[in-house]
Image (cartoon, rainbow, N blue to C red; front, side):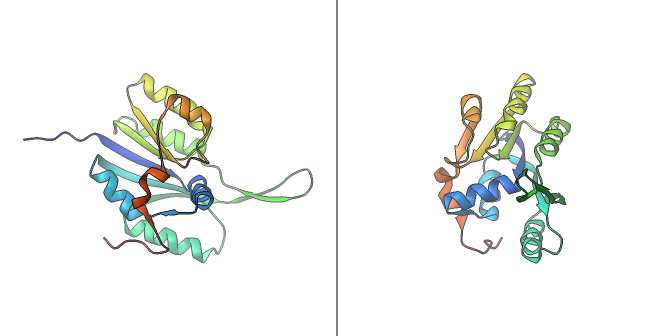
Length: 172
């Protein structure tokens, strides 16, 4: 008996998901997340998009762990910007990179799974729907944009709390 599993690529907006986890009070265990999705899909790739600060050893350790469990890292340096009051902010938005990669890779997958609650991805969902591709969003109740709730299939982290962890990765 042949079981057809839909092909999927996982796209993770690292900064968006970091703040979603921080706000929700629990942290995803990415090894458990992998096992969860690999029971449901033939996952072709895990893509983790994140801004880097120079000499950030803590982030380096985390990213090394992700690489060990076969996540592809897409990085760029964090940009420092100032508002009109002179307040300093760090930015490394990846909406364009994620969208471009989803479109460039869409012939390889049936389903794009996106970890982000950003409303900027509404248009991406509309375009994927036109070409019979699915987009599934994972975020938290507090950080999922209402615009995504209207037209996108989504799940809350709160529904998958068994995929959370302490500070360490689960061993493979």
